[in-house]
Amino acid sequence: MIREQTTARERAALMRNYGRYPVEFVRGEGAWLYDPADRGYLDLMSGISMINTGHCHPAVVAAIREQAGVLINTSNLYYTDPMIALAEWIRDTSMGGRVFFCNSGAEASEAAIKLARKHGGPERTEFVSLENGFHGRTMGALALTGQPDKQEAFRPLMPGVRYVPRNDGDALRAAVGERTCAIAIEIVQGECGVHPLDDEFVHLARTLADDSGALLIVDEIQTGMSRTGPLYAYQDVGIEPDIMCLAKSLGGGVPIGAITARPGIDDTFQPGDHGSTFAGSPLACAAALAAARVLADPVLQQHVRTEGSRFLTGLQGLVDDGLATAARGRGLMCAIDLPDDRGGQVVIDMLDRGFLVNNTSARTVRFLPPLVVTGDDLASALVALRAVLSA
Ligand SMILES: Cc1ncc(COP(=O)(O)O)c(C=O)c1O
Image (cartoon, rainbow, N blue to C red; front, side):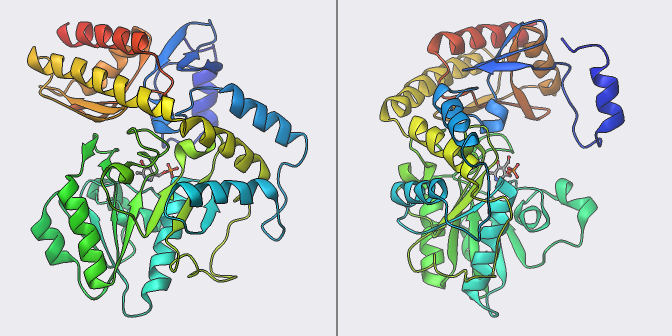
């Protein structure tokens, strides 16, 4: 339900860039969100993989409470311990290189673009990214986002980006050249409907980057923080990025973004090259460190693999019964394709039944539950989905 006046106040006060569903939330706990009448909704979206810990995880709440009473923010002009501790944690769990903090996924993409451009120098100014990929909505990130419908109103974009269909090795070979400063990929393309890249394609991107002198940027903003099983999705593929982008679930719900680069590339930025007022705040970093420790737990990662595979089997059952045409997933990042254009209606029908899902297109419905979701909750979601699709 929505409280009286909420929609009218929203319409009068907020710009119209979001279409919102007819529900208002006032509190959350674990995989559940509650409306003003205290009706519970099973969250199968996690704010688009932004709160993998589940809502109000006690460890994150405690870290925020403690840090908020001590020091919320100061400035990147000074040393603060939570920022250093979180950078050490990211460095030590990924490629061993230094970290730059920002406040969102788009900002992480922008930082990666600037790092790659500076590293490439004046002769290497081009990027290669993937059709239907998503890297954010600010102007640089939008240029890497190979989706003309999202770009159209904002042309001219940052020039020099070539787009390649996912898993098309020949197209990738043809696009990468001596002017390429970086290839940007997601290991699983999330926003366009959960499409994993073939391992061979990712390895080819790594090889082409090495051979041509370009950098490989891996955007783990949606796939990261154990969403697909490993802490970072690239770790299941057997390559290492030159630059990795993080955001979303890194903060346990608090805004933060980061990039890390391999040693040798991580010293490209010098004082004055890049920065952000809020970035790396003690509050965000303390929350992120607490969330990171929750999400890196091998027991939770095994839960993601086990429940993800069970859930995908359930989704495949819908395909077998003709209710869906395809089911895809890695860990707890899953989607189904529908035989018709009912995606938007399926979201509404699921909402009516108390389940939050989202459609990435008229024909694709995506599932990104908090990683703490129980097998029983996922089973109940499958029952509801089957009923909705059968109606
Ligand atoms: C892979 C990927 N990169 C970048 C972004 C942009 O992140 P933000 O919305 O925090 O700017 C998203 C957001 O959905 C994403 O999924």
